[in-house]
Length: 484
Image (tube, rainbow, N blue to C red; front, side, top):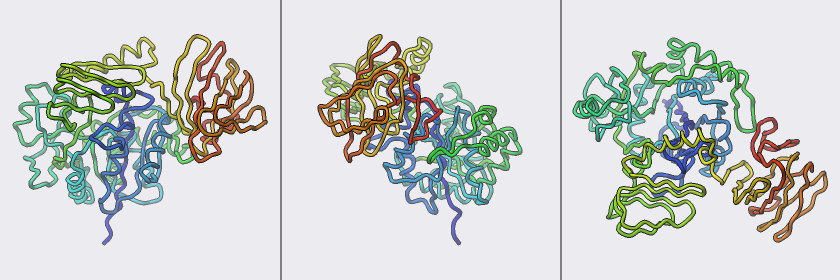
């Protein structure tokens, strides 16, 4: 008898502010390579570790609309074609995200198993992870709502806990009824939980039949189901994406699946999981799970050290040198450097809040901004001018656009660009330049097989990215503001 299809539902929300300055709103932690020596991002690893599961279907991903091209590109790089990429106009927590996924998965009458995963988790033992997932199928097929509890190794106060009806054992893995969910405890309570074999960390990983979770959602939070159904009924097909209708989704209650369903249902089952799980919630957590040298250090990028111990040092661009330091986190990016006591690295979120309050651009975006056609990097700027480095992928094209308040000079430094200006087209090769006057309707394309790189010099009274009038765009961005 064929097994029920298993559909991964990958939740790509979250900003990861405790991993600033690398993780930011424009490019959160799930889209970075953070774990081990692999080049794959956390999102890509989330999908790749599922290979080998029986009856595995194409994934269904849910992300913020601003990240849609990042998600699509990262899936393309690992040769995975999602069954759908659902775009949230605003974050509404896990209950609405899971609801729209279940509704989408059952739209043609199917009733698959849904494996709900966060895109920003690390699993160091994928084989054990898959083994426990396969065991969870039995309970899920029987109509249970299965979650996976992480066997605690320390009295953590930063995680929620799940209390099971009996002691759990990784040597004899079986589903056990859930007694209750416990919010993040104090240290005294966490120590008691560690001694009691019935408590596990709440991983936020779930497995259930689509019909089972929808029935419980309708019973316990019908307003969530109604709002999500309306958002899906009025959704907009945007290239390879499904854009949820904004007003209906904004009216949906902001609630986690734990609170909406799992704390109230009588169908909850927990399975113990001991597969090297981490939610990489801070730089300290990355040090904990990272591969260390003989002095207890984790290094990424261009790093030279002497007499450095028990530290996490990461360079994205420039050389970082440490000398005679211990227990530090040092993170270098294109526009910010973090130096912190490793034990206090989780407090970085407070710095992000201050930056946001002050209106600092470093709070939300890097100088390097990714777009569906490639990326651009801010090099230098002043009041009435700025310089960018732009790279356009082979076969890609920026939108046909016009600016009211700025002119642009383009100097091609690599490849050959096709430039359109007020209907006239010309090829611009290496070491050649062109001028885009204010008010000119223009477009930049790459007709070749290699990336095109150019230097853009903007000048004018106003240089904001909202000074763009779009006429044509092959990425469906007419009416949706984004740079270039």
